[in-house]
Length: 516
Image (cartoon, rainbow, N blue to C red; front, side, top):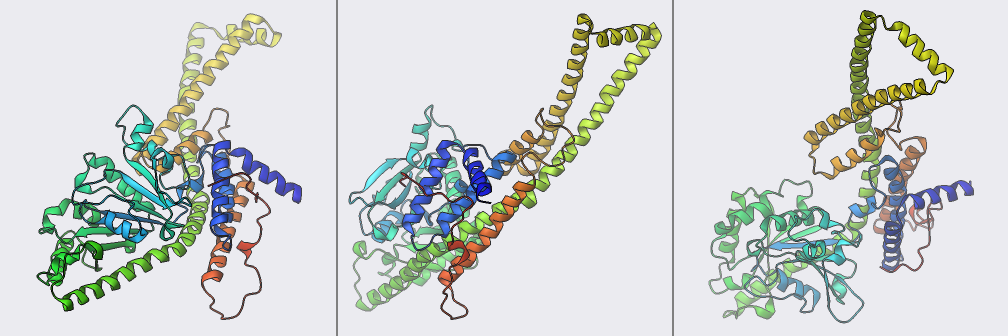
């Protein structure tokens, strides 16, 4: 049994490239160091590695890819809004350091990814540092950014940068400060990156400027930040924050300002939810009335407490999200990808058999008619007799004949496969990740060296199904382990170790020399 486990472990490791394997080991070590009392995430990396083995065999992912890089491993908070909405000021206040430049004009035209560092000084790194690191949500993002220069490094650096700081408030999580929507000259690319960030974020803070006199003047921004996202299944992760509320103190009319923004949001479809009303005390306008000041400060502290609590909650939600992604991906492979590939292969086989029958039947009929009219059957008999006798010229002629037949059959196979992929592109979109995965797997299953009558897609067999089932079971065990950490319905002291905290002997490996 131990030999089988070692053999399976070797298979998982050998299927991945040295580069991706090194990155996954680095990721695993970083997670183990970050949460020594919570081994679930580090062990989840091993489960992803198992799933990668199946995915690579099937052709769903390439040798240098991993399903683990399709999920963010750190809680991620995105800050969106216009250039004057106070995002950078909020970040500096939250971190307790002057990390981001602030001002009433656009001060930065890049997405800034902020993470923790043990070093005391703040460091700014180029965007390529994010593009090459699978721990961050921008791993290989350069592949999908619109071409704007001849150099890929200049291209990614034009949109992204990484800043590190020693603030404990950002330890174990990632903040992303976005450029203002109305301050960016390359709006289309910015919006595409923004959507990517929204999809991966655990929490999205949308900032609006209370000093702006006419919310309706920002209708296009409102429509993108609100309308495009309010019907999402995870729409509850959006918090709408009306910043710079201190400017309304002179007239003491915060309710009117909030109502104006609520009407603007209602016009683009958002009729539920609430505004958080905050401001920065260090840069607030003077309050003439102490009672007004007390009321504003109380409301600000109340809303800031709610926002901080939501940020803290995502650290717990992150673990569940990753394990859920693990289980979801495994089930998608077993229940959707395999089923879809089987259906595509069935259509492909039917097309190939049909056109093989039509083409070769027509050729056989044409040859038969020709031989009958020309009385050439005796020549055919003599030709095959010479083939069996081993005559060189006849053997060469026979080889050419077989080559023509093989060429026609391969052409029919390839043409039929292209037609199936064109149909798939129309169904799910040629640029989608799902299409890319299915196209790679289907191409591998219809390769020339694969016999036509094989039942299952390439790489899907009893061992593959067993591995996927193991991953699903492990994901359920991880959920139970997380529940044991954060809940205790029975009220009893648990003496036994949760399953997910026990070693996964089949694939576990102690990372060596890896540094995150």
